[in-house]
Image (cartoon, rainbow, N blue to C red; front, top):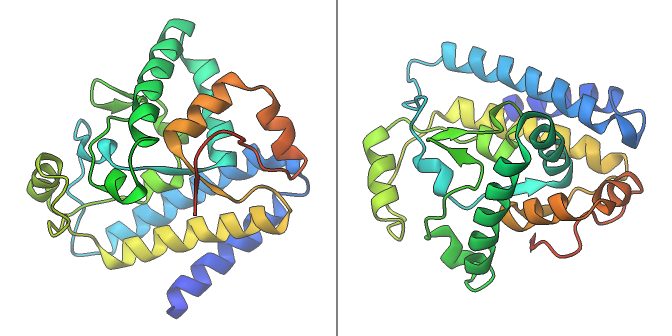
Length: 225
C-alpha cells in the first residue's frame, strides 16, 4: 500500500470521524464525504494525462454486480421518498424483486458474469445519482468500446475496460477511510448485496433503528463476505 493511498485514507478517516460525533449524524457525514470525494476525483482526473471514457447516457456498468453499505442504502431510501413518486418507487421494487430472484439462485461468482439492470436505472440515467454508493462512484473506464464488449459478453473476464491508476487509488482510499470511521463508531460496516438490501430498506422501517443501535441493519438481505 503506497503513501498516497495511506495519506488519502487517513485524511478522510479523520474528517469523517469529526463529523460523526454520534450515530444520528451518519447522513450528514456521508453527504460531506461525497463532496470531498467529488473534489478529490475531479482534481486527480485533471492531473492525469489519461481521461475516463465515461459519458452521461452510457450505462453498461449499471448492469454489474453492486455491493452497498448500510449507511449508503439508508441514504438512498430517504432520497427516493423525497424525489420519486410512490408509483416510481413501486416500479423500482418490482425490478429489484425480479433481480433478487435471480441473485438468490446463482453463486456470487455467477453473479459477476450475469447482466442485471440496476432497478434505479431509468432511461440510461441513475435515478439516485447524487447519493449513489461508493461502489458505483469508484468505477470508471478508459475504453468505452471495451465496456460495450464486456456488456455483450459478461462471462468473458479477460476484457479490460481500462482504468486510471491514480483515480482508482484515490477513490478506494477515500471510501475506505470513511468506512473505517463508520466502523470505529460501532456502526454497521457490513457489505450487502444491493438489490436485496434495497428491498429490505423499503419494506422494513426497523432498519434505521437497528443501524443507529450498532446492530446488523439488514436481516434478510444477502451479506457479502
